[in-house]
Length: 456
Image (cartoon, rainbow, N blue to C red; front, side, top):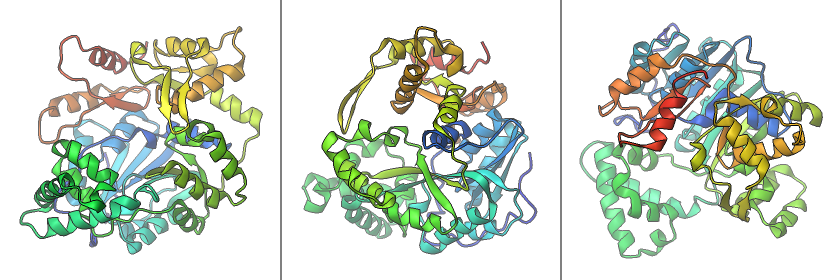
């Protein structure tokens, strides 16, 4: 495992971002190559050809859990993680080394310094929970990195707190940070102390907090929120929810165009909007203004946007063919699949024989959709039901083939219950699922361990 590019250990100031408390360890399935390829296909763009190899980078990788799991499960890819906190990078390098992952490098550097390094061109650049938590200068450097290092046809994933849904949370964040900074200790200790005051004020029905959805969640779930999460979410100086139009305009300056949402449900107006709302949107000619209006109609508070550079458009036949040739994974035990869900547009039901056919076939393991086709089912119906199952998070797009995950899962198991615990289980199909609990007879646990056991 390469630890870094020459000179990449230099770290420049991180500005108002939290650096005295490490972030939580987590895995973000939406940043996997197959997931991003799926989003591109939904929007009619050709995804990258990955059989001959590809390069992937995480800007603001934290502890490197996502990068390491994806590298371990995509042996033909080259993976890089970049983060301004040496504590994060040291732990990420140790994890990758212990798990015997040879195709990953981690770099302790801020975005400005990293932008000037001689990386290979990247096919995928992802950045989760960073862009709306750093200041303008860091965002400019972030965009500079992408402009220099993203290949034509490459995909970018960026998640951020969004307006208008976060508008009512702005006063809460300002209060939370001011309270925390007035208290002793590190950022995690300050955040924990601030949480106690905020919860008391919420109990008193302070008007601005009554209007805040996040205040309600902190009141109900505050004890389960780790100090690390609270610090990195609320104690940063540059916490700024963004309108989708702002983000799109800034990325258009580096020749990126929207390619859909990694929140798969958000790619379907008829799933999240009623008929009258869709009529209102249909009258808006500008695509970016329409998207902002859509966010108002659904009160969007968090976006997972995917962008593409110089993307090649597919005709409808080729788009459908590639979706049919994609591989899908059943994301929960067969008995746990629910064939309906509540959406902003009402109850969405997909309790059909075709949906049941897909779930039953994938219960045996990941398969290409074309491999589970049935002469009695038109391909159009098979694909429509598969896309609905994806949007409802019952199935997910994954890589074809199988990678050995025994080394990384051994290390994950050894760390359970410790300070560096990672509660995820790597799967041979290029993703991860929450690690099973220790309850006897746990149906999910038995299923999860079976999924991680390898090819069937």
